[in-house]
Length: 117
Ligand SMILES: [Zn+2]
Image (tube, rainbow, N blue to C red; front, side):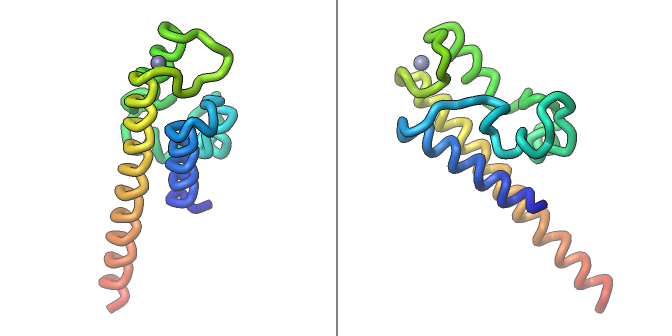
């Protein structure tokens, strides 16, 4: 299970929402949620990054409540400028986690090399 690949898929999901090609199905189409099981939210790279479960501490709650309060539609997608802003924040946050995981992996590999030399 490659967490970097999973998070890259999450970046792509939000890219598609920003482009207006997709809607947000929450836990049902969130790549890490689908693997890390949304009822328990255990081991998800987003939760590890924020230190909080269920996407708290990410831009997701703001997106979620804006969708509910401003649009209240079945599909969560980009309807207005605020939606677009929040979707971009979410995409950038996912990309930030990808970068964090890549750096972490690199550091771990370097530590391994040191131990063996
Ligand atoms: Zn909106």
